[in-house]
Length: 119
Image (tube, rainbow, N blue to C red):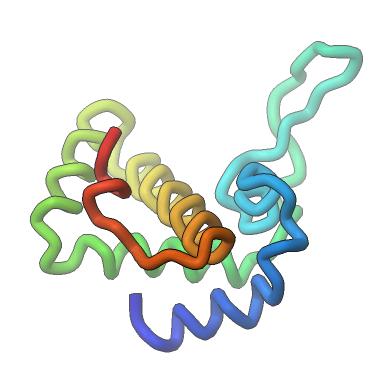
């Protein structure tokens, strides 16, 4: 991931315990779109600027660095790209990395490539 991006993540996240669920963390990092709904009816998405832009940038850069020289990661991206397209595939990878970082910090465990690429 790199030192600058890792430090950016740690400084912007502060305390992982302030996010009770991984969905809250992903939303705060701008890794998912906000839902616009009322009375159980969905009206699309809104609020593109809700959350932390620095974390969005950090996870996007981390996804790019993850692919550099990583054959297994490139194969995973190719599989997702064939289904969703290049841009969306990189966003999916950034979201997946965000979820991995959340669980790594929450459970105090290291990164496991096999578990990350399984699914």
